[in-house]
Amino acid sequence: MQVAVSMWSLHREFYAKRLDVVDFVKWAADAKADGVELLDVFWKDFPTEGPKVLDALEETNVKVGAYAVGNNFVIPDPEVRAEQVKIITRGVDMAKYLNSKVVRVFAGDLTEGIAFDAARSWIVAGLKEAAAYAEEHGIVLALENHGLLAGKGAQVQGLITDVGSAALKATIDTGNFLLVDEEPTDAVRILAPLAGHVHFKDFRPAAPGEAPSYPALSGKRFVGTIIGEGVVDTRQILRLLKDSDYRGWLSVEFEGLEEERFGASRSIANLAAALADL
Image 1: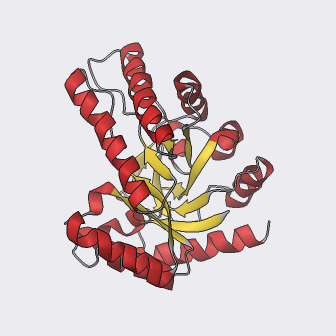
Image 2 (image 1 turned 30 degrees about the horizontal axis):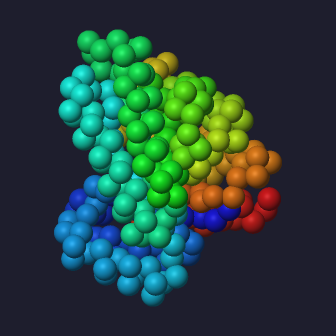
Image 3 (image 1 turned 120 degrees about the vertical axis):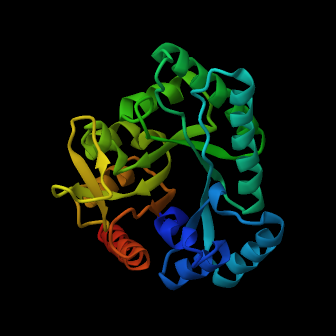
């Protein structure tokens, strides 16, 4: 297992126009990450940026652990759902360009007026089609636990089982389980054998009025924090992954209130130290 960092960890820096993808790759190297996770939302001008990113990756010897896309299959219009498949297939093409083997994908979330069974059937169909393309190209899609349809470990496991493709695995997001009232270590026990990618994220309970915060189903609220400083049992999760023979990337996804470069760098260091202690 090696430590990467998701560019989402510095999303406020990006939207404040203080860095771009090339800058992020160089920052990640300085922060002693072995790899990066790049996201489709952060390209400004890919034809110009793409070659520069490849140069930065070669210069720094940083690898692309995963490429992340933002798809949603819970949409009644079949033409729009078809476009969501294309978002993933374009992500597969991008992963190949970046010499990555993993594309992080989503399922979609419950929407008012859409029945659960219908939503789930659209997700399975869309992922089947996208996984067939990924398999042709030697890429693994990794479904993140996110939202109400694919938030819990058993939900992600069920979707992967129903799709039935070797090219679909799980992105285990250690923090997101808390937002569906599931203990992260319990969920990781379910999903570790299916892991294709891992987001290491940590949360702590929010103080009254503290913002921004994330609501859980129970009504509790959480705020992001530096890895190892919240309620996620980082060391136990690492042991569970090791016991399942997971050998992929551990991608830091910092969402804390601290200054992003500081919080993400400290998260990288804390995760690397915990991994070294295994």
